[in-house]
Length: 387
Image (cartoon, rainbow, N blue to C red; front, top):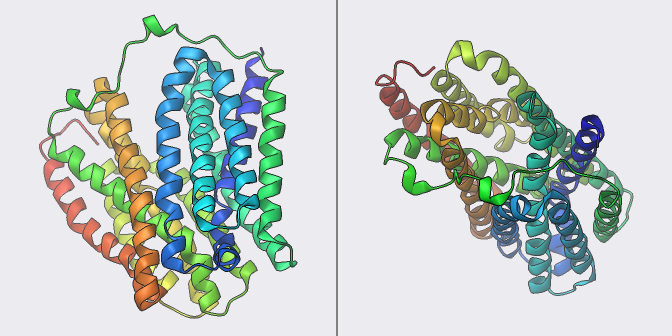
């Protein structure tokens, strides 16, 4: 199998993950209306969905090493298709939650395995290939909300979008049957790299865990609820969907810029700049009422948030190069915990005191990030050989 074909196939699948995964956010107001539930109840989809993604991601890595990439990608694609079909056919919220969790599990399986497949096919240029893979995911996140907003604004049911999502993953499963995948290392030759027990109780890792938790918690809370919040402010559904795309435009540009300057500027300094910028622009995005302030606020919030987790991951990898698998898994678990808890809490608080108060949780977390970064800078002084 030619490398360029298998890489293009993987990029296509990752674009679909970005395209579809983010669509639930602009559709959330319609989902709330369709099920007749409150924002607090709807917020439970965040922990359920991300728990599914987390479990699928862990299992995807293990199963694809043991049984091969193809079978796991096929399973992940089919499970996502089944989850979306269950979603559109359910009329009770508990079944809707089950559908979100099922689709999330399939997403986790496919996500992890496509990363491994790109690494298999590009062993001599793994870094550029994987960076491009995640850039394509961001491109999907840009396009998805615009499609969802346009279809919903045209008066079509939100279920039509998830019918189409189910068809996309059925199609992807079918074309997967015709690909021959690169051989992987046999399980008995694999040396386990993931073990939290191998990590020393390093305060720097604890602080980086906090950085990743705060980033993904506040970012997912923003992206997940912004369309519902914009509806409360009486903006159109299309405008709210566009704000999700604006955020990801800032995120994609910011990651490109951070990648260019992080080595020269220094990891902790980049994290500090991103933390300060996020704290400045987050309230501009959410606590003003004019579209002329909301749009740049959302864009620059995404721009500055972009460097928090990837730069923290690079710092952890530089500090523990021999334990890269363990530190990556540790910070990934922080990301999942943030996405599972903060948006859910936002919905509960919004039920009681309104969305501005609920979304204020993200602002409080970003304020807490400043002393976290300060402590990180103090600890950094003891490690002169790290940026």
